[in-house]
Amino acid sequence: MIVEQIWTANSGRNFNYLIACGETGEALAVDPLDHAKCLDPLDHAKCLEAAKAKGWTITQILNTHHHRDHTGGNDQVVAATHAKLLAHANASDQIEGIDRGLRAGDVIKVGRTVELECLDTPGHTMSHICVRSRGDVPALFCGDTLFNAGAGNCHNGGHPNELYNTFAAQLAKLPDSTLVYPGHDYISNNLRFTLDREPDNAKAKELLPAMERQDTTKALVTTLALEKEINTFFRLSSPSVIKRLREAFPDLPEHPDQKTVFLKLRELRNKW
Ligand SMILES: [Zn+2]
Ligand SMILES: [Zn+2]
Image (cartoon, rainbow, N blue to C red; front, top):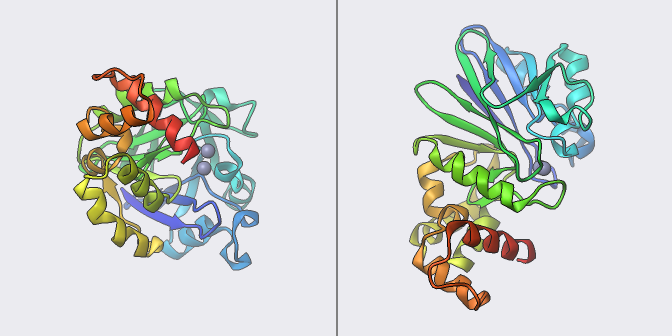
């Protein structure tokens, strides 16, 4: 499996991806964006251009969810490649032209060597798909569910209870070595939130200056192990997270359950 992370340079800080089979050159485009979302008109159709540069053929498109910044390039890529459009089976009233509706456990094959397993991951929206690769190097393409050092918001069709369940029952249980490929670059801001919630988080403190300077065309790809260190939404039992949370919410018990901590963190992040 070859992964090409594409920095769109738009105001939403979106990442697009190509996931390709090294043997056949077939590729899956994840959440391709159209030119209207890009700042520079020459930046249009980045997935098409990246595929062309690599000599790959885009045969499938995956939309992780229905938000326009994840579906805006569908028509353009389909017109250019006749690729099949894949999205959550329950998103057919939100995304036009789905060729294959996806459910938990479904497998997407790309060429001969790539197999991606679908995870049904509600929370950011109620019909959100993440995919994980099978193989030597596990990888997770997580749309707007999990970000580097953060979690998706629930403002536009989602719910924090569902997001917690997705984190606790699915994402936290993936192998620590899983590479994390999110739909946006928000890492600097998210690390600042982690440090606001957990000022003694040494790893987040160490990482922040480098992330503020990072070249997003070669962005850091984190692992789930690193996320468990720097992502406050995975640090629900941390004594300093809980101590700080009880300053903001004095009614919280001394040992709040993990779901309560997650929901309170999500609530604070909404206003932060
Ligand atoms: Zn979204
Ligand atoms: Zn998004």
